[in-house]
View (cartoon, rainbow, N blue to C red):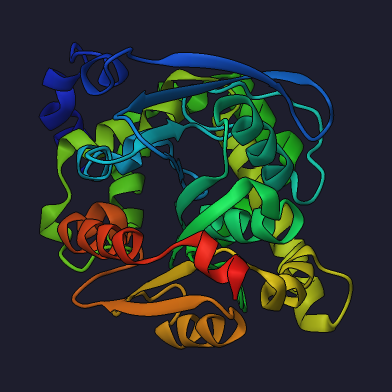
Length: 329
């Protein structure tokens, strides 16, 4: 199977640069201080004009994930699409990450790129990050769109995540140092294709091109797998603490939801097998200025799996909501 996928993907190795073909200025770079106050370069692209709209991807993916949403959202907004630290084309510092580092780094990216409160659209762990931002840095948030957010998690959602969260981080780093993902690239892509079947309704829609680009950073850039595993291990510990009633950053975000002023659209996939739609209903009840919309016939990766429906829901929400209204009320 891995050999067959390698043959199907062989024509992609000489493909054009995705950033260059997608954004007017191609891939740009921004240096921020991360949560450890270490300078890191963040890769990003932007298109469109108008109020800033920041796209925040989930764990394990990068800006390519938003490929079907960029043009629609850029019709009336300045869309900023960035790779979180550790993913895609951004830096991968090997220092241990503090809990909640994504929120701190998103705040610093926003402060550097936006001259006013921004609209945030995010999926999965990215959506948890923007909820954390709204709790800790409310002045940076205009409106929020969360998609399938792990705000009431019971466990890590996939077998691959569970496996990586249990392996010694030093062992994974050794594999990255030896460039094993690149050595076994066909197998890595085959495993990625299998894993993707968990998050889409129609597995036949998975294309060689998206598998190629989704796995590109893991194969071409050292320590992507290491940072992915580290974030999973942090997530596992926080979920375990949450369930056992111990201090958890997830609980901190939960407890701050009632104070979120930014109007929020809670989007949820009807067929999400990772986090059930009832979690979306519960989140909607905890957010005082929220709307709840179910996306039918859709798996966990909604923005890429059902982009037309997701784009329409986001644009309708943005056309009918206003931060000013909630502040005045």
